[in-house]
Amino acid sequence: MSNLKNKSLITTQEWSKDEIDTVLKKAFELKRNFKKGDYKSIELLPGYTLIMIFFSPSTRTRNSFEVGMTQLGGHAIFIDANKSWLGRKSESIKDTVKVLSRYGDVISIRIFPNITNWKYGASNQVVREFVKYSDAPVINMEDDLYHPCQALADIMTIKEKFNNIKNKKFVLSWAYHPFPLPLSVPNSTVLIMTRFGLDVTLAHPPGYELDQKIIEQAKENAENSGGSFEIKHSIKEAYQDADIIYVKSWCSLKYYGKPKEEKKFRLPYRGIWICNDELMELTNKNSIFMHCMPIRRNIVATDSVCDGKHSVIYDQAENRLHVQKGLLVSILKS
Ligand code: CP
Image (cartoon, rainbow, N blue to C red; front, side, top):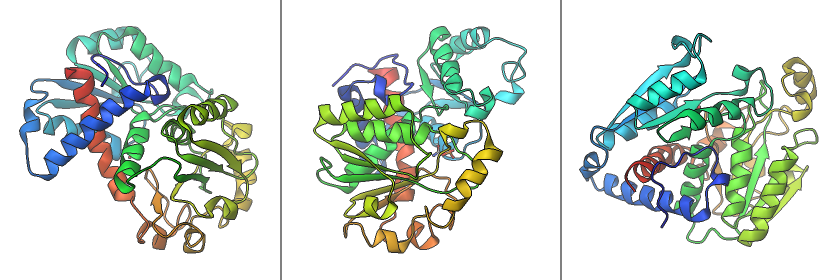
């Protein structure tokens, strides 16, 4: 098991497999204890403070981190970036982070691509600036490229649902959505699933390719883990015999930062690139349906899929809590 003391998390891709496994092991242990009604975890981080800066909205990330710190005996502070001098462009990243890391034991940030004018990678650069200036570890709560805490919760959920995850067929399927969404979840998903030896199929219509760098990393991960990686443009072919269907919408890099133009391009896929019962029928009997949430019901996936026998979306959301507790303990107490 790795020593993760004071280690920042920008993307799981920059952590070793052993470091990721260390967090997952701690997360499973904390979840088991919590389910048994054992509240001893309040002794793990007494007096510790997590400072969370949100430039972008959240339901799961904010609340799972806040509740997680409470359950560990610590405290989480929510900062609406628009109410801070940094968000109002009246203070530098350096000064903000230098000061906040004198107060908090860990700093976290969420910053979506619209905040940095859809300049590809610019939000991730802000997170990297936080890491550069912080005296405390930094957690990326989602930028324009990565959502590592979601990826950790996702792999935890898959490990819970299958005895052996190696070479399980994992499909990340694009879905129509009325607005262009960040690439952080799809990037993080293909990167982590290929690390863990799954047979990953990335399914999307032409024009929704991920960044070539991510594709190359996913291929290399698959080679190293004994998994595989392929891209399909046929939704039916992709779903065939799948063990895990992960549905997510993301924006087109071809029209990055041009929502009006992309809208026209995307519209023909409405009602076609949607997860429904007919598609789920093509998957294996014990397959699971995943989505990071929030989900646009009956646009991204039908009610019958979201609420159906394959769906694990609420377990997946719950695991954000457990895996982030594992992460916090690992980076603060190792
Ligand atoms: N999945 C996720 O990050 O949810 P929130 O946007 O609600 O935090």
